[in-house]
Amino acid sequence: MLRFRLRTLLIAVAVLAVPCAWVNYTLRWIEQRRLLFRYTAQRIDIWHTPQRRAPGGLWLLGESGVTTIEIVGGDRANYEARARRLFPEATVIVYPPWDGTIRE
Image (tube, rainbow, N blue to C red; front, side, top):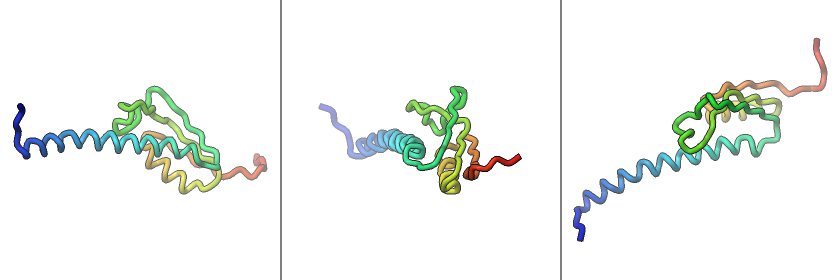
């Protein structure tokens, strides 16, 4: 039968907890990235390229990088701040809402 001390058990639990915490943090970040575009009433375009790698090890869990995010109309300031925080690898471009007039 295996015998070990309580200290050894605590060290083993701590060593296993660190990768589990990282995976949890990364999965929550991926979920927030995807929810930004799912529940919005304004137009947001994203451009993916295979050359751009997702930051922070997100690519290890299958998340692809984003090159450009274009936000048009609506609550632009709120979405711009969230997009810059969730997609640090992307260039965020914000356009004002289009009022239907064509200017030359």
